[in-house]
Amino acid sequence: MTDATGENAPAHTPASRLSRRSFVRYGAAGVGVAILGSGVAVMANRPPLSPRQQGLPDLPDWTAADIPSLRGRSVLVTGGNGYPVGDRSGLGFHDALELARAGADVTIASRNQERGEEAVRFIKADVPNASIRFETLDLSDLASVVRFADRMHGSGGSLDILVNNAGVMGRKSREVSANGFERVFATNTLGHFALTARLLPLLRRSDSPRVVWVSSSRSFMGAINFADLQQVQKYDYGAAYDNSKLANLMLAFEMQRRSVAEGWGVSAIAAHPGIARTNLVLDGPGPESLEGRNHRYMPFLFQTAAQGALPTLYAAASPHAAAGGYYGPNGVLGLGGLPGWAGIPEKADDQQVAARLWATLERLGGVTFGQMG
Ligand SMILES: NC(=O)c1ccc[n+]([C@@H]2O[C@H](COP(=O)([O-])OP(=O)(O)OC[C@H]3O[C@@H](n4cnc5c(N)ncnc54)[C@H](OP(=O)(O)O)[C@@H]3O)[C@@H](O)[C@H]2O)c1
Image 1 (cartoon, rainbow, N blue to C red):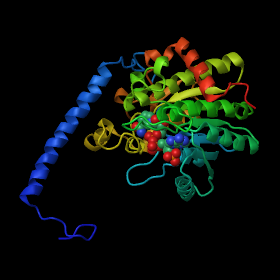
Image 2: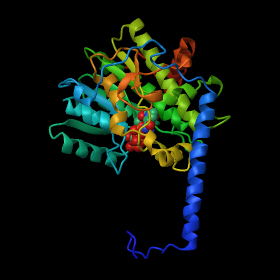
Image 3: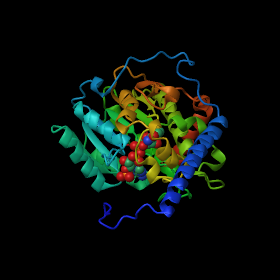
Image 4: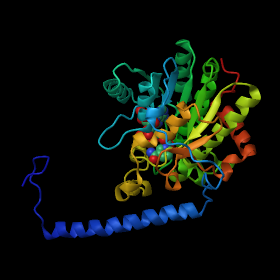
C-alpha cells in the first residue's frame, strides 16, 4: 500500500486502532474544551444586545452582486493578499476582488509582496479588466506606514474608500513590533490609526470618502486598559486580539464623531465578518489553540471568506450604509449570514474612553488627525 508521498503507508495495526480511539477521545475532549472555553469567555463579559433588541431593523438581503458601479473610485484595502489556498482565503482578498469587479481602482497593501502579486494575478484572472495593484505595507512598523503614505500622496489623486482590514491574532508568547509595541496592538490598531491619519488629506479630496474599520464579534470581550495597553504586565493572546478589535470599533465611532465636529466629510463605518475560514488563526495562535480546535472540530461554524467579506463590502460600497454604523452577519449570534446591523457592545459606546484612546494613539503613532500633510 502506498500513500500520497509514495512511501509505504502503515497497515491497520493495533497501534493505529489505538490512535483512532485516541483521536475520537481527544476529538471529543477538544470539542468539550472549545465549548467550555468559549462559554466561560462569553459569561465573563456582557454580550451585546442583538440588533433587534437594540431596535435596529432588518436589512434587505444584500450580496456582492448589489455593489453599485465604482468606476472612477479609488480604494485601498489593507491585507488584501490572501488569495485562495485550499478552503482558506483572506477576507481582504474578497473585498478587493468584489470592489475591483465593480470597477474601482483598487490597491491592496500588506507585507508579503509575493503573495500580494499572486493575489493580483488571481483577481485579474477572474476580472480581466480589473484595475488592481499591490503595494508593500507593514502596519506594525510606523516607518513603513510613513513610506507607504508618502507613496500614496506622491501618486496624486484622492482616496475614496479605505478598508482597514488587515489583522493578526496574537501568538502564544508576546511579540513586539519594530517600534517596541505589542504586535497585535501595533498591527491591528496603532498601524491602522496612523495610516488613516496620514491618508486623511487624500480622503478629504474625495466627494464622499469612507473609512471602514474591521472589528470582530469578539470585541465585546475586549477591554481598553490604559494601565497596560501593551500587555507588558499580563499577556494573553486572546485578550490582545479582543482588545484590538474593541479599540477599532471605538475608533470607527470616534472618527465619525470627529469627522462631523471637525468637518472632515469622511464617513467612518465599522464592520465584522462573523467567523470565517481564513489564515488568521493558523498564522496566529495556531492549530492547537482553542480557536484552532474550533476550526478542526466545529468546521460547520465557519463561513467562507467570501461570505465573511460581505458586511465589510456593504460598509464600503452600499449607498445605504450609515456613517457611524456597525455591520455584521445577520445570522445567529452574528456569526454568519448576509449583512445586517451588528450588536454594539456597551463598552464600545464609552466616549470618554474613546477620546482618551484617540489621544493616546496620536501620541504613540506620532500623528495628529487633520494636521498631516
Ligand atoms: N476570520 C475571521 O473569522 C475573523 C473574525 C473577526 C474579525 N476578523 C478580522 O478580519 C480581518 C482580516 O482577517 P482574515 O481573517 O482575513 O485573516 P488572514 O487571512 O490572516 O488575513 C490577514 C491579512 O492581514 C495582512 N497583515 C497581517 N499583518 C500585517 C501587517 N503587519 N501589515 C500589513 N498587513 C498585514 C496579511 O498579509 P501579510 O501577511 O502579507 O502582511 C493578510 O493579508 C482582520 O482584521 C481580522 O481581525 C476575522
